[in-house]
Length: 200
Image (cartoon, rainbow, N blue to C red; front, side, top):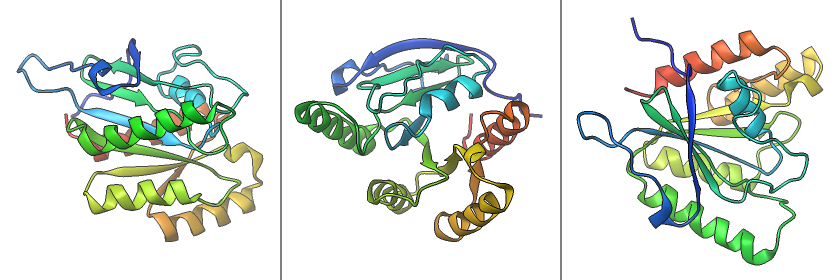
């Protein structure tokens, strides 16, 4: 039986340029697999990371869109890396900084051979943005496993959420609704879905 992931987490580094990215390896000398979290600014990536890792302060949360301006790498169970990527969309940051993020993300997605899974976070109250769809189709074209996570589901009624999950599944495949206030159940379902998509 495969051991459940996400028991321990260690912050590794915050980086943007390719030469700054860590290159951690297993005892066998192979690069550690990576899971990348991506989504629109203020979609709830930091909150999801903290709940996924069962810790309140692993990732810093903020009400200010665009607070994450670098790639944050976390070592999980000494087996894989979780990478929190800068959010896209309406980030309140200088245009030059947004351009730097965009270039870095483009390089990361195109060159990071250790990338094994993309977690695409989408606000359950909103339709997928053009950036969301671009990443979705890019991953599909390159056969990189991708899991869509619907965040902020606590903002919807039960019926609204059912409709949203149905329409999202039709457009993007199986999506995982994540409720920050239903911690144990949402966390368990999310970890199960991740482990089905990544080989360790």
